[in-house]
Image (tube, rainbow, N blue to C red):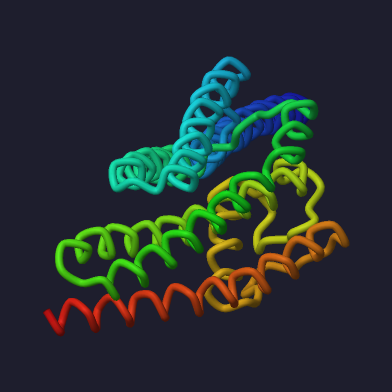
Length: 255
């Protein structure tokens, strides 16, 4: 009996050790699979390096400066070639921004960089709205003249659409900077991840077209002020776009 009891204890201890090893192995495998899934899910929102952020900031700054300079040239000179240059630079900026933000990468910006963006983010929407309004006037005057001015009218109408798009992108940067790059949660999006720039583009274009938010909640007084200004400006701007498009289309059909 004592020998049997001793063997039973040894067998029980051995079984306990084996089951513990199996449990640890299973837990380890589950943990590895969970980490792989998390890496896969968060790969698109993983923060980029500070070096990448500086390079991105420099490239964006150069392009936005080119947009501002070409806008000023178009507003003061009013020649056809200045309009074409402005539209070309704006189109490159919009397409490049779409390619950069579409994957949904998290940009790791410093607080000083965010303050700088917030300080100057109003400039792009302002220039876009002024340029778009001027293009609308040019389109209406050109289509009224008829003849060779029709090409100018169509090109100016394209400028109105680009200005509208630039207006929404500019406000998206304003929301993003005012929300601390997604850290302050002044705009609360569904889900638990930190918002990225594509979320604010979605938010901005929703307000620019529907004049209201959808599934995102505004929880900051500063962001509410921007939303109110954005909604009012977009309402009048959309009416301007529709009026210009209707007039130019009418002229094209007539010719």
